[in-house]
Image 1: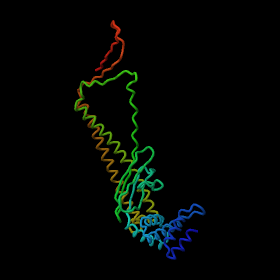
Image 2: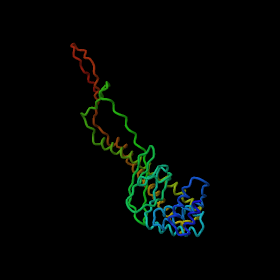
Image 3: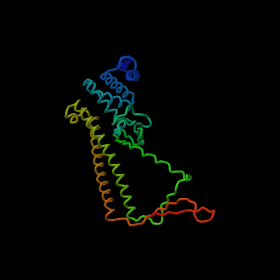
Image 4: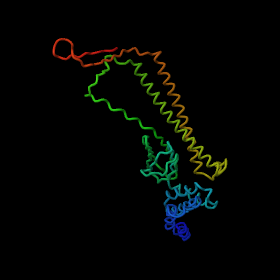
Length: 316
């Protein structure tokens, strides 16, 4: 069995051989599946081997996966894996990534991060990186960040629905009556300002609604992670040092949720005030400019003669 080979190689000090065996055990699809406790132990031992080989990013990743199930590990294993994770994280950058909608696919430097989820904790090599989120019916969102050794980076990707494609304009050669807006009188300044204000208010409502949805998603994630922490460490799970990474990520999510919620309220209030001001301006600043429409309908002249005529109908 791969796990047994890995244990034997690790005890003999052959870290490279042990790492190969442990990876094979985690990826094995034949035979009986590993239990949660076995996978947590194998991932932790693999992380220790990778740390000894200088593969800090892989080590941080596998140790993090192992410690997500710390309740399945012994106290001695928890201490070993936590000390190794802290050492590995000092050599790489840590990305805390929030995604909305939660089922969007996320790619880091062009490679998928795995199954969709609302939050990701990813370890990356120092330097520039790019993350992309995509989902059918939504416009892709791309963000770049600079990873710093031993420092966290925080990115939020909020996808927005695609704008419908406008219908094609009629063929100018088709035989339809021409409806020509008369350019004789330009709209007054009150009309132009009112249109700009109403458009801005409508855009603000859409933006505020998007912020509100994002805040709701983040609130659900915060509650879910808080329940998980309480289940593993009790009501004061974040008062000690038992869950440093999880509690740090929870603080980031809470701050992000509160910031997005405050932005949603501010944008919606401002948009409502601007919309009300614009609508009320129809009473205290009416637009008195005249507008005309000219309908052009081809027809045969009734007057004597072989030449066709044109009737121009103007409606004011």
